[in-house]
Image 1 (spheres, helix red, strand yellow):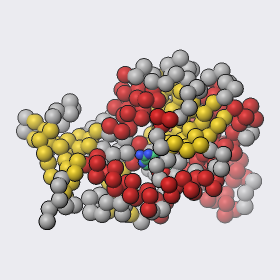
Image 2 (image 1 turned 60 degrees about the vertical axis):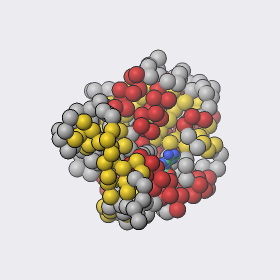
Image 3 (image 1 turned 90 degrees about the vertical axis):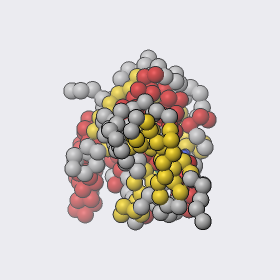
Length: 324
Ligand code: SAH
């Protein structure tokens, strides 16, 4: 019996909702905050500098989209504790779809407020961080066929193509182009807010290019993305150029994308890890230096991962994006 074809974004949304609700994603992949405490700590410092640039408002919301185990935010808050006026001004907001991950986050961040989407984040000054969030949102894929296009649907664990309207992109015969409407909508909505600065860290090329980037990871190894919906983590490359264009169209300023390694170096990650390592035993010091290398080395995560900031254009440029 064959099933009704399901559009790829709907398949991916359903698969990831099941995956994040039922499984421990960190059994299948690891992320920057899980690799080094320095990652969340320097992002906490970044948020404090952005808050200064906003004129140090008495109240500011610090939000994270897709906080996973809550590690990034816990590390950011520890760093913020060294800056008491910032710590006193901030309230923590977490946008998380998975009830299972919310429970894990609640154990570490008992004073946070949870949201189903970024749409309910409070009005007023807002600083947002999102690490490996946009890559988990559902994509559509279009295939260039002759003078026109088809769109990919999923049926019985395989792609089927149906006629589609023109996604207004260029590609050669048979090439795939991707569109992440959910990511564009999140970025556009934050870009339209006053007194808002958002930082997106994810993986993908700086310039958009055709190509099928849908991938599944299970137990740290690549898997068939269509075979077992909910059994593996599905992600796709983030199209930073399209997100920056969406931010501009909504009236905001966009900065970057800057390679993660460059961004973290500008925020002083090397010095911070060096200080931690000097005060640590040899095993811990080695682990700290390995983490630093993994996050910043161009052959590890330092180049493939990139950082994009989207800010109210009335705010000063955020730290980490100068070309010096
Ligand atoms: N930022 C974390 C986790 C990355 S995994 C880290 O760096 O370790 C992706 C996260 O996004 C998970 O917390 C997942 O539950 C959440 N997520 C995925 N899709 C979502 C959606 N549509 N709405 C809210 N959260 C979502």
